[in-house]
Length: 266
Length: 307
Image (tube, rainbow over all chains, first blue to last red):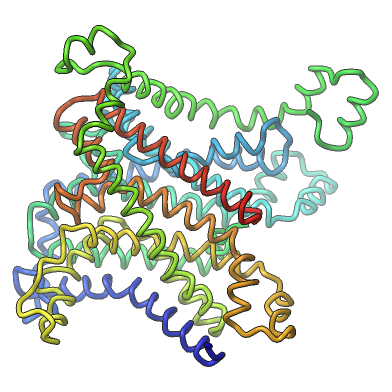
């Protein structure tokens, strides 16, 4: 028979154990990034900043990062606009087979990502627009389209439509109401949707690998290739910088817009 | 067909609801949904149709009798008959189920613990979970290459404790893939379960206690069933993520631990066999959806839990 004490102790131990499992690989990677030796050693036998300088030696890293940022930024912006209209329809207006249509709109998340890549590359080859910047952009839009729909729907259901009615009764027309009342209230949903779409696109490998050829390349592809061809800790330095930037952005956005509550489900 | 007040009245007064009323009623939603539906039709539905067609065609190196009988199910038969693909399918589902189970076992106590700690600590843990969710998959997989490296932490601890005389190769096997997948999936599990736990009213946490039940009984009989919507959401998402894993087995596995996405990609990118590659990935997609469907059915019908 388990006692109450054992229960509390168990929850605490398992819970903190889980948290440690979640964070310790990242801390070890940061430690290894300052390693002086060519091989991965824990604990490092000497320290240096050499691997941070070596990031520049990853093949085409600057160009690839710019391509990834451009694709991720534009894909995230376009799907956030599409998703705002979509979320309005789902939350505010009636339409037939609503549950089925919503499930369809969210389905790209559950489809194997490689399937999206394989389907699109054949389609683009048939249309003769394969391996271009535009086809890569479209592929990433399909990949990320569902994320802002989710977050904007979540922020719309939290939101109070009577404020819009108040604006209308004070003489604001539909557009003014939308721009000055509706959009500002949806900000947490819009921002977390955009952010997630951006990060998922920026980090994507399985779709890009099918849609790029020749000179076109993305950051995850180059970093992946470096990791598979080299054993030195340069990717650890890259990872540390990546995690730091993402952490700063997420902490800032969470402080300002309280976006995490939108990911906790209905 | 009408589902709310005014149009029920309309359909009663007129024998059949007129097309005009339906059009007017659905016009705003139609206009708002048109762009995304058009986009997904063009770049999601049609490409999947093209891929389905390709999976029923023959590749130039396939036997002549196959070339003559298109559309054919040859590529699907081949997927089940060849040991490389059939083994990859079994392996993929084995890895996915183990990973989802482990992710659940690691994540549930975290969510219970989060409800017991102070507000600052709780928002700190939530932030950490969210940052992990946003951190790059390649970066997180790489961190496991570091942890499991020949001179990495695990090896040094094991050798230091005298469990192994010399470092072992811990990467490039199925368990390395599972550990990395569990790590990747944890935020997908923690966030919906924590959300579901938050929605359980305080009185239901107290009720079992007033009836004399201990915490273990309360967890098993009240809290766990009530958090099922979150558990279902988390496990389903994790399963989909694991079943379609591609980068993780590429980075932490070996050719002998290939998962389905890898085998399909190899057919397209290396062999240029679009037909078989399409059939392999279509088989995976169908099986994944089927399993999620059966899972939802079991949870709803047999466990009688509304998710």
